[in-house]
Length: 490
Ligand code: GLN
Image (cartoon, rainbow, N blue to C red; front, side, top):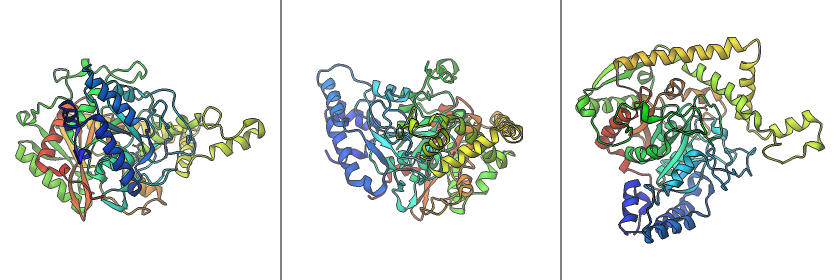
């Protein structure tokens, strides 16, 4: 069979189950496609050379009619800051260029337990700090829709590889929008779950109070299937939550019996963000709103007064946590490039810490500054107060609205190099996405249109643990717009 790379999870698992093709055939086709196409976009850092052998094992399991997992044969690409046993995990940094984790992240273990195949590790901004995937030690990732444009970030490889149809689904991490921004720029679906729904064990921390691992895929249905497997309590991550006790939908966040239509739900339109978006984005959002009205939702203007403080709060907290989380990279426990005995301590330390790229260094320095005595109250504590304010304003909005919508990113994908020398301009891209991380709530980006061949994404947010409501609404829109049947020519 040809063109297996176009299939979604259900089509792949059914195809394999019904004997239309083998797992080996599917994985081999994707491997060939990666070899042929990925040099154009550079979405992979490392390929798993064992993937075909693993596929053969799954075929063997199927032939011997032993039970296989629900994701048997699905090919998953993984952002290279999520630990994979035996497979290099670099965080797109020189610092970890030869680091091979001795263990799997919980999400990886759960996927493997369901017989999914990890095909390789995907490019990102170094340590997930960035919005375009230009800040990678392994070269930038290009937008599959137009190779001169950025693909978004920091999970750029995870989104570009789905748009280029190089894996069935991928995993990214979202600290301030890193799953949703590249999903929006690449016209695929990216989901950030409620904080605590997915284990962070094995995710190399950038800013632990903000980040969650989230799936990127071609359809909302694929997102549900991955969430079903990767979410839930993990004793290795104390911030994870036992979803069974938290759920108000018969213990099932992800089933696709779609009942939004009956809900008579209300959607709040975040005016500050929608009005501030580029014109084509604004127009696309209003046609999506028309669809929601047709479905029977009530859409109303709403306002989040603290929007203007969100970025300052986010970047202060993110950098503070980064400075502490990245302190462990001292070349003694990781790296091993230099022998400490050959150097005076300070020289040794600045040499090895010099292995970080400029943006990572900038964040460590700013983060250390906002945490230092004398400035702690002025910046770090204040940032936390703003975070609480944003949380409570959002909580209030969710008393009135089931869902909130905004652009995922207020600007269209832009040319490579355009913002790389101006970090402040780069940070502004995240204005709509950081809200969900500050508040710990779920948010999705779904494709709603194109302008001059460049993708546009809509962000939908819901209150914490309202993933079902969120995914149901996203799926209604997805089916009515039907954009995800379009893929770039590569
Ligand atoms: N662009 C944001 C940052 O650089 C978000 C990154 C992320 O979500 N990992 O912090």
